[in-house]
Image (cartoon, rainbow, N blue to C red; front, side, top):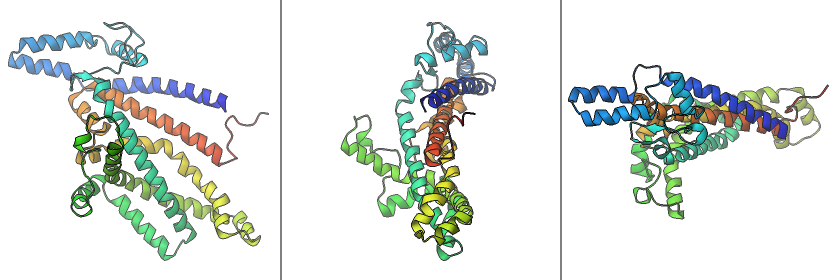
Length: 340
């Protein structure tokens, strides 16, 4: 187990190194950058003082260097104007759009993004697991059709449209707080029980909106997998031996059907982050989505690069978690294979 985790962590580190290079060069593919565009605008306006500041920032953050050298300086593998100061040293770069370090711009957005998406993922599994199981066990019945209709509606409804509907009706008829992730009175305040309750109340709508499509997809997939398992001979044998209906479904068929269900964790985390950009804008959520959208529009490549790298890291962590859970869930899966 320890050897497996060590190998996986080493592979994750190498993968992140490759992803960081791809992210950096892809973000820099469009011609120009934030400071170059700003300098052109200032020159047209004749503001010499601001032009000097922008030129200073270009040299300070090595934007006047070749791109390959900019990448290694950003990574922290090559000294820049301030020596070794990059991702490896904990320096995430400078956001030219917000005129702040990236760490300060994303200080709150990072953990709020993790909280929102973990809540959405928990919602997906808590809802889809029982509904998918019931739909498979009662295939062809009324319950199966009702679950199927709910699933199709969830897949067909765009997230941003559902967000707009809940934005109006949730506040007017249900009194659910809409917009942001905490009441304005608690913004900037240290964590307290009152602030925690406010965050939980504000999480209701984003969790439902972001998790709806994933829940519908998971229900259909689990139903199909479990139906396949329930038709196998070992289930008929268990029934002939007098095994109870609940144990006959849960002990073996459900565990086998959950394999693809668990394996999706690695893909689910980044898809929730990328798929919630419009939802975050509509609901005014201070997550990474709006920040990434603003960074890509303004070519703020340090900010955009770090956000994309963070999403990639979420993917790798999710895949590691899914592999460990699969090994625990299915005894047929072994970490290192059998020795010969």
